[in-house]
Length: 194
Image 1 (tube, rainbow, N blue to C red):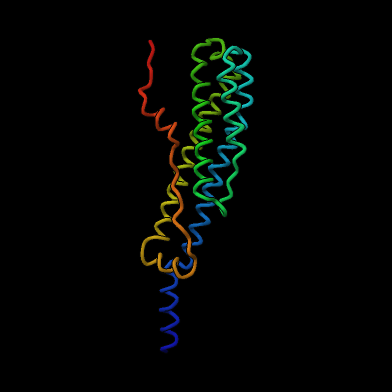
Image 2 (image 1 turned 30 degrees about the vertical axis):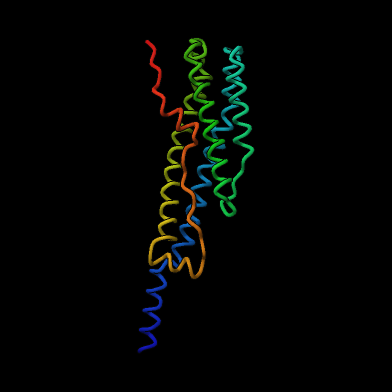
């Protein structure tokens, strides 16, 4: 009877101390990061089509078009492996995606100067797809932020942090943040023209 009680108590202790929940949550973090990168890939795949449509109407906006193409190239050249991710590599990835977001914002804003471009069906379709993708990116990043928070709680808050210290030795993972350039852009008041 004592052995059965000891086995039951040991099982209860192990199930509540994070022996399974810590690696499960790490898997959740990796899956949610994969969804973020999947949505960024979708966005990157839309950009060449968007740039080509805009070129037809606004070819003299070469600087903006080149900035978008260049930002896309930088963003797609940085690959992250969730299993071997460093804080520096993650920051580089976030920055490149933020730079691409800012370049796309400039590209979309120049469309205001070209009524024929705004009326073009291909442009409207691409703009709608891009807006939908940006929404998906936001949702995926929010999920990622939540899974990082849950993982960090498991590895830093008792009693599961004791299990982490004994069995796993996972470090707290870096949280998603916007780049300094994005922060500076967001602090500027939007310009409204009538």
